[in-house]
Length: 300
Image 1 (spheres, rainbow, N blue to C red):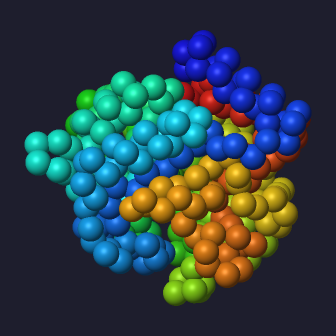
Image 2 (image 1 turned 60 degrees about the horizontal axis):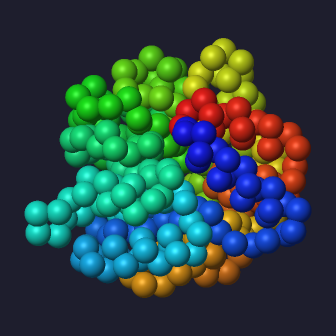
């Protein structure tokens, strides 16, 4: 991370904590909900299957930038499906950087070639060992690992959603992240149970076991891009929601925190690690502040 970016985020954090501000710093643009996969845990793919046009996405990026957002995510659906004429996802990342966003990340399922060196992080879904991953996402594990091997930069971060199918395979993903070329880290979430995927949700005891496994892997040197200090809050779902410092833009609609905010009762069952980390950070939790500084400076 550049020094100027660090000072910008530090200043934002201090103002937010001292004055209780609710302005956002992180924004996500949904470029499409079209996806080439039909994962068992996903409730937001192919609802419209619309690929939003370039001008619309650029206007949404500008709107977020004008709000003061400086961390931008591109999400889907599957982001690498996005095209408009000759423009592709890489053009959006480059334009976001030119617009002035300080960190630009992309979320992908990894089934398309990964040529995106301009992104700060590519959050790539890997949901267990080969058997468990393929059970959740279809027969995609081998092509994903091939695409990672052929990637043009070492900016990949595994993104694992822990659920009833893969809860015993956290260690496997940590080891794969540690030992795979072009992979910088791994980031975890617990399954957030939309009404049609409630059976995949973890119990409090299962969450505690997963956090214990992640903690042990951190001790063994696995590159985990999460904050251990947030684990007790995540296990018991006792972190404040929603996260006012994060917003999502989809088809002109702005949502605080995430699209799931409109599903009754879902915030209370939130499994997103970053929501816990950000809300605790901007409430001034000293352990979270110290650990986030150390972690973000290491991996971004």
